[in-house]
Length: 114
Length: 113
Image (cartoon, rainbow over all chains, first blue to last red):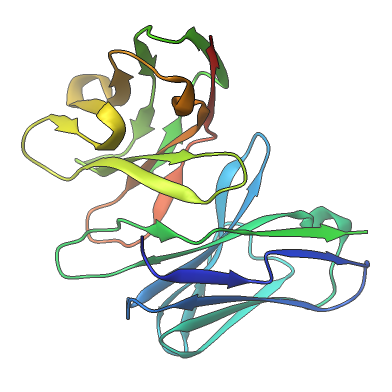
């Protein structure tokens, strides 16, 4: 399995509080992604990174920000959590060099916003 | 932009029966195609992928998929399912030269004993 960890694995928070989720990889892959998974929607891309300090928005980026100061870490921040951000969040990584966009996923973080 | 449709939200099959999960994509050229499986409470695991060449690809756990350009489809098949195959299955498409994937909504597979 690809070396991807996510922390925390579970979190319950209240509306209006800031939340940061961490993704850590040991594969030295260039690309990292944050998705959210909701019933009936599959996986939707929030933000992704194509290198240290290089990030871009996905299809559902409103209310989220990201940072990548090191190759191995990709942080997702909810500045002021809302109930609509209750979801399961997955981090993924992919490399280059002929691999195409094949992605490897972390175990997920279940976030509940009350 | 590419898109993916998995027409079946939920499928139930009996253990030992054959399985086919449908995936249709929209993309102007030959895409990269993937099938992932997600067991309850777990992350997604890659089952198989198509990049080019032979249109019938073999994956892990006895699964295979066939790329049909004329039908814009990449259906997943297994000749005989096991109770451990109960999970959610996602089809994904990626564009050539890009590093992002677009996922279908998923098909939940239930296995009857």
